[in-house]
Amino acid sequence: MPPEPNTAPLAAAARKRHELTRAKAIQALRELDRTGAPVSFEGVARRAGISRSWLYGQPDVRAEIERLRDATRRSSSPPIPADERSSDASLHARLEAALERNRHLTEENQRLRRQLAHALGDQRASARTGPEPSAPSRSSVTIGPC
Image (cartoon, rainbow, N blue to C red; front, side, top):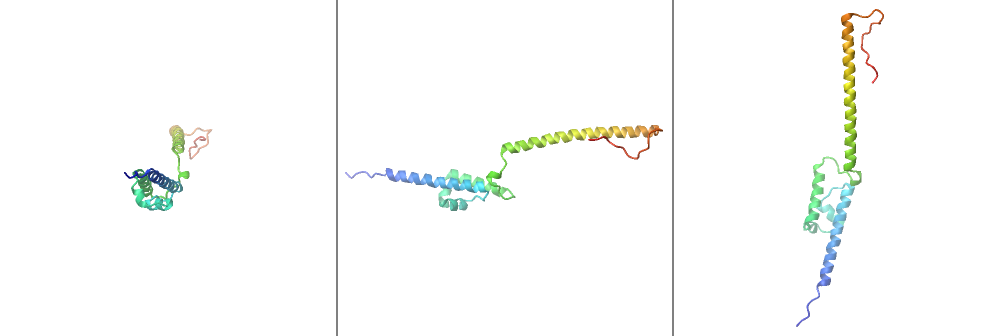
């Protein structure tokens, strides 16, 4: 009976090579995304030093390349490097600041409308009764300081 071939070292080497190739692909994807460079199968393969066919055969890596590629295609502006992108927290803070500014402007607008209404009411009332003898005649209405 012939001895059985010892294939365990071959299998271990293949697994190690697969994991190394996978790590290279993921690192290349991260670098392309971080720098804002366009993501494509060709670009990832070239940067990682691996074959495009290997990338197409890996469902999760392929899905990530397609997602990033489609995201950069949809945008009309050039891609923004990852370290320059706004975080969710900063976007939320900017939104809160804009809403607060909007509230202040709405309050100021209401206050100014009330002042204008009072000034126009005073002007109409003085036009009906005539000018007071001691008050100088004015051609415009002055609204108080803001």
